[in-house]
Image (cartoon, rainbow, N blue to C red; front, top):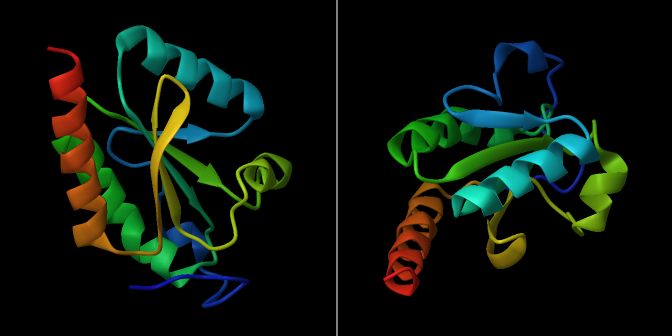
Length: 137
């Protein structure tokens, strides 16, 4: 599992990776965050928010995994937030390391995962989907 606490692993090649591939929605402002959260709430979708950075090696490793999961789980809304582009917003979520994944329902945090751990990310997704489907019955 990898975690970045500062500008680790930066090689200046951040253009090589697309954090917005698959069904991932790029959040570029507080307004776009509010729009996507409102949309997810209206549609009853769980939200997965990935706070990452282009210079972070583990984040770069997880980007294609995150995009793949966004296609595998179309019933969820996947958001990507670049902590350097939205510093104040990211700070409001108390991001201390990247990547950090938040799992939200109706705008409320259900769970959190810090670090590039694909099996644990998928495990949390499955658990949340299962518990969400039990509540909606």
